[in-house]
Image (spheres, helix red, strand yellow):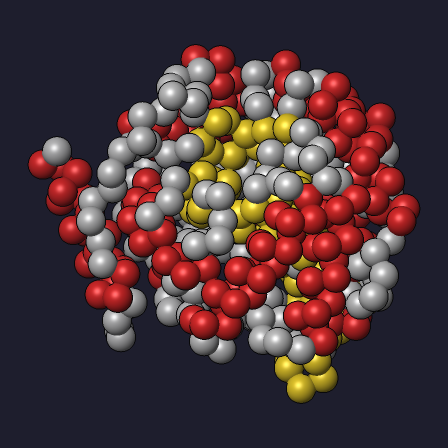
Length: 390
């Protein structure tokens, strides 16, 4: 049986989402050395869409060379990477190439930043057949073939919480998008493909059906946060992530990786003004241990903490942190490179290398789940009742 896969999500402390334009491979290498020394196996990171595809018919050569360097450093430290394409949504901002914007679509819930400028528009319908769909096909073929067979890549991730960019107009559109891009990306690269679903895809009907959209993927993924979940009992609820995991496993009939879990740390230098629940450093560690124990017992492929590091406080007035200060403090390491207690928990679990025995999740019927109105709180209460009797 394979070992439970322990990994981490990555942006650098000093540059955050500006990593690709303020590229510092030596700092990245030091980070990867720290991650490897902790015993972690995998690093999920993000190809900022506007950097890699500045025009609909052009992939930036310099960006590809930077990605080559990152993969070389990962391999040198015995790590494997999960590059996330079409990013896209990240930390409360939609970072987009200007050519993807549709002047008939307001930016909506998440602000749009394109080439460093705030834009009033959102992205067009990138699921339906058309120029935006074709541009994505061009990207996966070009990037995939460039890295064909690269052993430092464990899987491609099609997108980070892509329903936060746009919601498919139909379940069929989501399936067609996933199926086409996954097929062409695998054909070009010979590397498995997955995609970044998140908790909100299971809290409301976004025309995202795991049975459909996950069908072409090697394995399914899900992101979950007790601090964000509308149905969580409290900020430390350790069953939120296992609940989301079991739903996706049941609906998709696939093995599932929890590719993001975590919670923000409370600020040490003042009150919590973010509006989101937060945890102390000891609470983060105990929360991580509780969630990981449950995921291992229930047969998850693995879990990746969000995220590697706190960000440099000097970034506080820059997007996304100017409107989302809690995003500064999700790290397993502090911005100065020192580990928090949660890093010790992750290291201990990783070094135990516990074998994962696939477990059949409780049967859940997807067509029954996505009813109007969706009663996620009642579903969660039923899940907890079953757990209490187990």
